Length: 185
View (tube, rainbow, N blue to C red):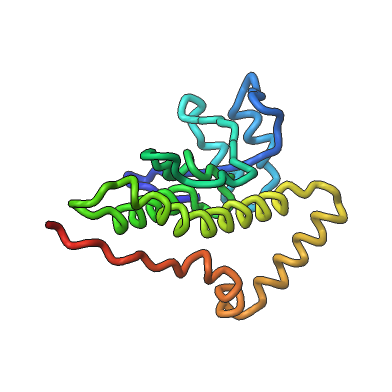
């Protein structure tokens, strides 16, 4: 749930469904899927305007590409490392890609010579983020009563831990520092 300007709200929900599946009434499907969640989720979905609802399949590159470049072509963002949205890192990783690539390019240099360094700098990090997002998604997808009880208990206990402990576990995800950019020539 993300507040937007003019009293609007962006609400994202994920549910397991066959690829390409659609409901005759998407608003009713949202109420079916999320109607028993805690407030304010059901209320927000109840207020959703049917013509403003978007339903899209989520795709990911489950296996990392061997490189984020080939010859003189560089891939950034989802083209290089599409991931499921469970960590909110898709656009973040695309921006990091752009910053790293920009830091490696020089005004007088051949861009193709910077691309192997771009892959070397980005491939380990993006692979780790894709993997972490997939793991989080697999926890979200648990459906058996025993598995959901275990997940709920673990999350409840994690919520009792000091913030420093939780941040320490996710620190590598959020403590990325950009490389220095070359001054304009």
